[in-house]
Amino acid sequence: MTAPASTTTSRRGRIAAAYVLEDGRIFRGQAYGAVGETFGEAVFNTGMTGYQETLTDPSYHRQIVAMTAPQIGNTGVNDEDPESSRIWVAGYVVRDPSRIASNWRATRSLDEELQAQGIVGISGIDTRALTRHLREAGAMRAGIFSGEALADDATMLERVRRAPQMEGADLCGEVATDAVYVVPAIGEKKFTVAALDLGIKGMTPHRMAERGIEVHVLPANATAEDVYAVNPDGVFFSNGPGDPATADGQVAVLREVLGRRTPFFGICFGSQLLGRALGFGTYKLKYGHRGINQPVQDRTTGKVEVTAHNHGFAVDAPLDKVSETPFGRVEVSHVCLNDDVVEGLQCLDQPAFSVQYHPEAAAGPHDAAYLFDRFFALMEGQRA
Image: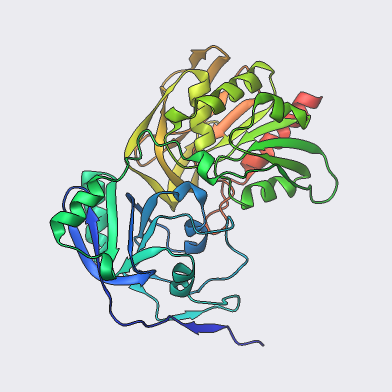
């Protein structure tokens, strides 16, 4: 039996750091990862596992993520679990970094990886108090300062308040692929899907490939002509960062897809864009849903699923009735049982549906993996 790989988190001394929130609250701790300064939206993630997937999820672009689990880094970092080619979080906040990284796949510590990619973080703060504060006050701008970037409180706060807001932020183009690439079907090819990359996670096309779907991943600014150039059996819109109210180009493409009655599936940001394409509004949640333990009811079956989430915006659609839209009747298919937020849309006169959460979750629950089968069935039905 091979002994598990073990790496020791690097020790660079206790470099002072400060986490400064927009409303003036300051948490003081030690530098973790790179030393310097960074700015972003302060959010928290309630997952107790899967930190590597969280860090590399493009939907976290320009966000400083605080982990509510008290100890982070136990299993180190490997080259198999990233959801993209780099870490996307703007900053990282943990209470107690594991001093030892031990796992048979680990090749380095989390601290070393954060340093290598220039991700400024902070450790040693009371993340319980931080989470309670954000739940009461809401997500807000924040900054981490360490080493020579530390300044007096007023100066740091003023710099945080100069940072851009998340509302109105058009970010999906900053994280998407620049060129088309293809993820081939595993085994016999049965369908072709055009997937708009708005911040897609690597596991998503893999889940489709497992079902015999060849996935053509397109840039965020792809046109309807680009989508239909691959002769798709279905169209998919991915998760991604930023405010869905800014994605007018992608909404126009989606309306073309609905007009042609091409089977459509959207996840997270893609669900918000389906809402917009159907004529619903979107709004910013107070502190969002981020974690791998959110209870959601599939209203089409009555089943309750434990699901993985990462979103700060939601669709404003009525829960208690079927809505009439320019593309026919639509109902809310999934709802969050914590706060009644819309978690999915089902078109009743169109082959189109979406969910607000992440059914491809690698580190999280797999309760919602059936949604890829539902997309497959839509394409089967359309072909028949």
